[in-house]
Length: 159
Image (cartoon, rainbow, N blue to C red; front, side, top):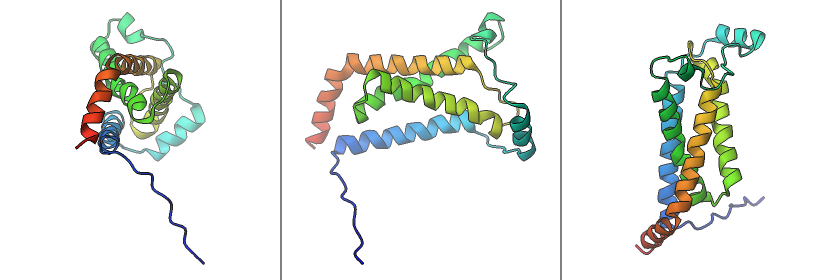
């Protein structure tokens, strides 16, 4: 019986560097949004039985009510996803809708997982909206900087 060795596609130096940076970025996002992990089995069972009651479905409720740090949280959520919106089309050549869809699904996943992993963390529709907005801004930044980014990629690949 022969073992079939998968063909590895040749990657350029710039692609390897960009993917490495992207993976580091993703680990950072997971660290910021999921740490500290304190899995509570009974809390998870409780969530399964009662549903996600703690998810705020009123967009920008904290900002409207004047809660402290609401504007800061909105800005940080936007900033957190700008790199994803920029790097997905740069590395994987994704179009606008696919890029925004991936950012949205990542944000939704984070928001749905947080209550299982951390006591006191609530899911919020505002986070999903602002994270997705950050992805849109990142994609627009990519479009604006595409000529410069392409030149940088070419220079790195000539090394």
